[in-house]
Amino acid sequence: MSDLYSEILVSRLPQPIDVLKRTGLIAGVIVSLAGSVMITPVLFLAAIAFGVGIWYFFPRFNVEYEYLIVNKDMDIDIIYSRKKRKKGAEFNLNDMDILAPLKSHRMDYYNGNTQMKICDFTSGRNDITPYAMVIKGEKVLLELDQETVENMRRTYPNKVFLD
Image (cartoon, rainbow, N blue to C red; front, side, top):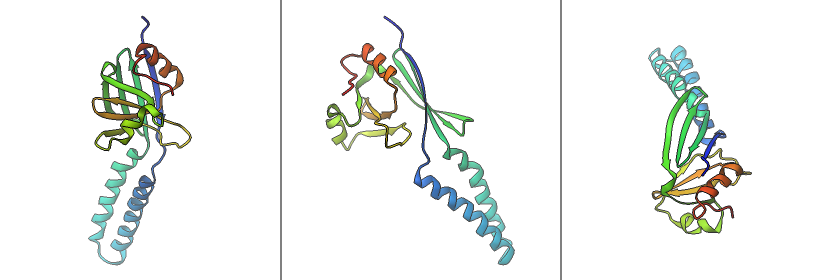
């Protein structure tokens, strides 16, 4: 039996809410600085607070996901601004119920289940159909390449579907 190994890097597209947050932080700094000059110097503290917010939150707007699959283990890391790495999730693929394209008829039951927790580790692009993996009561959305899915199908033929 051959070993299953795959490493995939997926860059998330900027979310509309992220653009609003960036704009709000920058506008907060500008308005606070202008207010501290024209109205009261106390608003300079607000400008400092918005500046700290920019320093802390701006790196979190550039997100990449790294999937590492080794034999029966899948690790998903979240990388912020290509500098900071955070553990996203760890899964034992033996516990997987199903892996199929999100819009597959095999996922109809899981897509209709509103109680299931959804973990989205995709880029958010509309032209790519993500795969959905159901494991331990969670639906995990992933962007896997065909080679990885084929290798997983060979390892777990009753759990991985391509249709």
